[in-house]
Length: 200
Image (cartoon, rainbow, N blue to C red; front, side):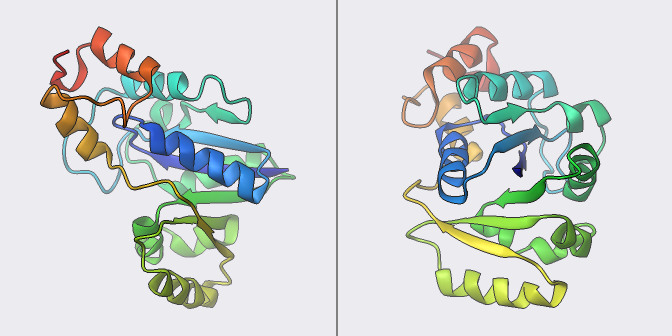
């Protein structure tokens, strides 16, 4: 079984999060992707939207994807969400699975600085999305560098363009059209719960 972890703040979850999962499932032949909204990301300094809202939005965004599951593991555990802890959990829970970790290009370049990086590399095969505007030579060089950790890394090309949750929050706050960024059901949830200062 090929099982991938996809973690992040998802504040909010947007179309490209979904498209990224779909790309990895198709190109790598993943049997399952588990999405883990973080309780508190070690890399975020600003306040996050409440945990239960981010969890609910993820569930809504992926509700029609049979191969994607949304987990409340990191939220229930609380505190800072470290990738290595979640991979340990998955390794114990799915003993016979081949574990993968889905990252963006920016995150991939800093993986060796993450908490318990060497253990992350030992637990999971790293899948990194490469877009047209990414410098693939830098990513390839980093993948070579990670071989010192015996890391397995795969760079996966995609047509999915870059969208940041920060950008989405700005657009929402300004009451602009967000249909390019958010699925209708996620936007409906945001409206109903008055998130991100969105004014319809």
